[in-house]
Structure formats: structure tokens, C-alpha cells
Length: 366
Ligand SMILES: *Cc1c(COP(=O)(O)O)cnc(C)c1O
Image (cartoon, rainbow, N blue to C red):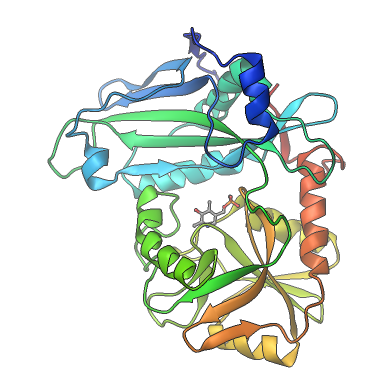
């Protein structure tokens, strides 16, 4: 397979070392960006072409660009991790590449090959690797968050799949996503708003899903919660996921369950990795429907011992309580979330190269 090479247009105004070092000392999340971005253009006639790494900066879009009106857009989220020897790695990028193609098909966007998806990340990191923060210790979850995305850039207000599309990768140094680290979070159960419906775009990683979740997110924050949990649209009964993370339920007898994949659930790479790591740990993973009644009853009886959310940005985060219109659902006893913590440590040790990569999940970038 041939890998298209990315032409380099170097930035004439890269951040000075001292500026970059100051940013890397306290990067927060999603606020600062590296010196360059990767770009590939697609047109109906020419296909994918114009592979380049160019200075990071504003895009020039016609006000009639289709994405601004009809939200024909998809994205990915993946991280680059610096290992103790200075090398830089990413985690299961072929899973993100495959999901990006699934999302593209649903949004009637052109599919990008693994070679271009992973190649664009490698090309960007070849320039901007000094932006990957170095962890101070095993508790320092810093990384470079990578955001590949694809937009319908054709100037046209008619409603049909765009014939001109642009793909970019931008990169943003990141500290831990939740400031509290592994402090349990409170989640709001949205009883009115739905994230996804059968036949819709729930399984695709598209901006529209996030736009549709923001009113519920606001409701959550009005109730003192950081995240929203959504129920299914058809029966208002089955747990699906959070606005941007998958959910796991740990039972006293060693079962660990997550909602089975449907077209209303986003197939998380972290979710898939947790299922494998749980099996390695001697737990019994289950992918099945889980109802809100089961959550309430198993929490009250003590059968359910932990609930956690997972995703690339926040890794694994215990859920302390589910706040609902009818009052909070809390676990019978707070056991300190040992399973969530163990799985979290296993995953981070793998990603940061502190544990042997027995599943072949790491790809070297630099
Ligand atoms: C990205 C995302 C996730 C988590 O996926 P990861 O690949 O684990 O980062 C879960 N749910 C939604 C809705 C998402 O957009």
C-alpha cells in the first residue's frame, strides 16, 4: 500500500520554546494548539489530494459553505502519549480510522483510508512532536489530544452531499480532562432530551450529535452535574451512554456490563479496550441491554458495586450518583471504585509504555 506523502509548509511563526513550555506546564484541555495542522482535500472529480502539513490558523470558508448550514461534519478524538524514553505513541489508531469511515458513510462524506488517517497524524507529529507533554510521574495524565475532522466545504446552499470536502488534523496539549482525576462525578439523567434515535446518527461521531446534546448538558449543569446520561428514544427505558462517553456497570459477582452496541450508541475505542482488559483481569464482561430500573434496583440492593464512564479524553471516571427528576440513584455502599481504578491504571500503563503491550495496541508516531 502506498502512503501519500504530506508536503510541508513550515510555520514562519512557531511558538517560542519558552511560550510552549509555559503552555505545556498547564495546558488545560482544548485551549492551545500546536504550530501546524495536517490537511487533505477531496473533490468529487479528483478524490483525495493535496496532502500537506501547513501552519495552524483560521480557515477561509465561504459563508455559504455547506457545513455551516447543514452540519455535514464528522470528527475523531485520539491522543499521543510520550513514553519515558522520549518516544511518542498513539493508541489503536486503526480503530479510529475505521470509525471515521463509518461516520463518513452515515454523513454522506467521502471515506478516508487508514493510510491517510494514520499518515496525517504521523506527518503532523513529525513537525509538532515537541508539543507532546512529558509526564512528571504515573499520576500525570498529560498528552497531546489529536482532533481529526472532515467538513463539507463546498459553496452551495442546495441540500445534497457536498462535492468538495476538507479533512484536517489539529492537535492540542492536554492535562487530565476532569480536574478531580478519579473523583466520582455526578451525572444528570435526561428524561426529556434524547441524544440519538434508531436510524439516526448516534453511532457516528458527528458534531450534530453534540449540538443536540447541549441543551441537556445545560440542564445537567443547572442540577450541579458535569455530564448527562441518555435513555433510548423508543422506550425511554434503556441506558445508552453519556454525551461523549460510554458507561460500565460493575456487579458484586464479577460481571461487568455495558450497553450492547446499536445504531444509537457510539462504539468507543476505550469501551472496546475495557472489555478486553476486564477479561484479562478475570472479570466477566457482558454487552447487553441495561435498563434504568436495573440501575436503580441493583444500586439499592448492593448488587451493583461501581458505575464508571469511559472515553479517550477522560479515560475512566467513576460515577458517584445519577441525579434524576425522581431523586438521586446512589450505590448502596461506596467501595472506593477499586475495579474502575484497576482498569484505569492498566489502560494508562499500556498507553504510557509502563506495561507490556500484549494486545499490540500501540503505534509509534515519533
Ligand atoms: C467519542 C465518544 C465516545 C468515546 O469513544 P472513545 O473512542 O473511547 O474516545 C463515547 N460516546 C460518544 C458519543 C463519543 O462521541
